[in-house]
Image 1: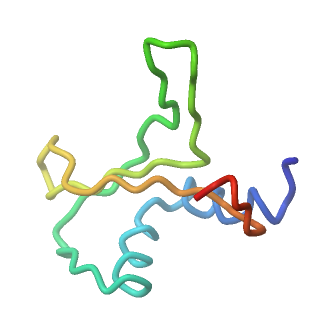
Image 2: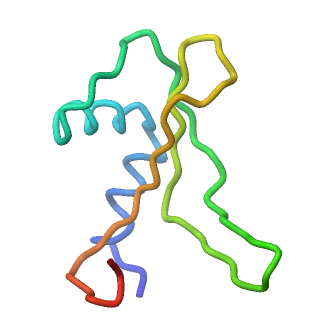
Length: 86
């Protein structure tokens, strides 16, 4: 069920995708250059088979001026532990 608790963190990322680089540095101690471009990417993950997957938000981090993605981040809000979702 969609709720403010679920949508708020994702909206922050949609409004300012660069926050992902800050989170990766602070939460996971991942070194990321300051000379980067951060952009929102497609949130759909479809396959040839009828199964389709959709993420809450997807962000790509690239070296500034490069079209090549260096890091891809899929952001999913989880409000509770669900053993069916590892």
